[in-house]
Length: 437
Image 1 (tube, rainbow, N blue to C red):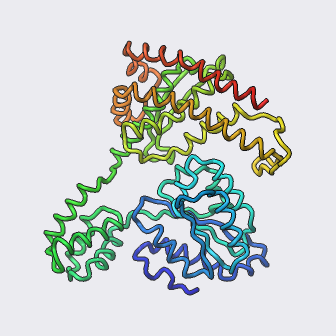
Image 2 (image 1 turned 30 degrees about the vertical axis):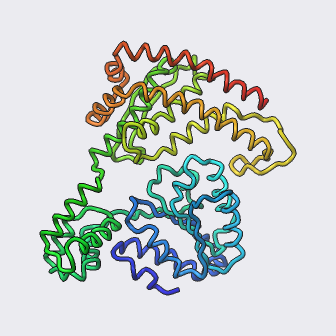
Image 3 (image 1 turned 90 degrees about the vertical axis):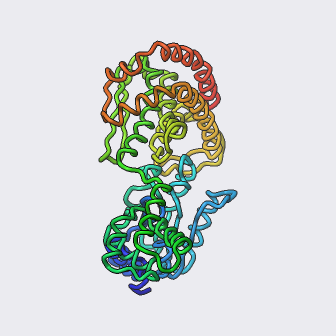
């Protein structure tokens, strides 16, 4: 338990300073309990893959008396495994560290698992000597509930190195090549990849160029690697966002009778990145068909990204919205059994049997909406690209703009055909409402 546990981490001085500070509190965690000061319970490392989130996490384990890892490995009952992990930590040596690798993949679209994780984090005292550390590539897969203070108090960005850090990394990885300081400066300004890409470059350079590479040869190798490993520029990311939003727009246009206005905005400097705004028609707002249309619209952005773009965007907020709509459709106040559990969000008792049955119904209704979204996205490929091209350059499309884009007669025929299929889906959902009542 010394300050040297991050000595092997090259660069990231600000990050290391923050981690030294946070972890030092855990050395004397009982002292803060006597002072009635609550220690932070969680740290989240986020940022593009390949830049050392897992490496730094493992270095932190040197500071703690015990550490526990959790990573998806085809486990049979993940909810139980998480609960067992926290039980071991509570009854084990302190201070201890629990590490959740790739938490965004763990809880992505799995709201039951997310609830289990939230409950376990809330289930221990902040001064219990347990610190939770999670890593993720994209925070957009995580709900606001899991990110709030009291669960993950600190969000630390582990992203691409600075030029000065690249210099240190090149000096470390290519120490065998005896490059001069000036040559290291040139390489650091040329290379734009992740740390894992730099490690791969070192291996490739040894294989191709031997132990005494020339600067020009290594520069050529960097250029080849850059062409192979596509780096997303701001313009490209905006286009991928536009593809995602085009999926929302296509499906919203299909159900435009439910809305007074539809608009979309790409905000490159915002956490949301893209926002599709829908003003509902109040006369139809409380209908079952309206709810099902909203679910379809919510799911369509992610589907468009998978079919026609590069699936690099978060979709947790979209899926959460669809899930909440489906839950509202099947929710009721009936009691479906005798085994009750505490719902921590609403502070009420809920039947375990009801939770299981409701969850199955929600998944089936979401599957119906997802099927409809896929059909619309597949049938409107040309419009997806057309909207994305205009939106990525213009950043904002009003209802009037969307009308102009969608003025083709063929799309109206498709809308009529697609809408005729919805009563079947509506009846399907209605049946579940009857069963839960």
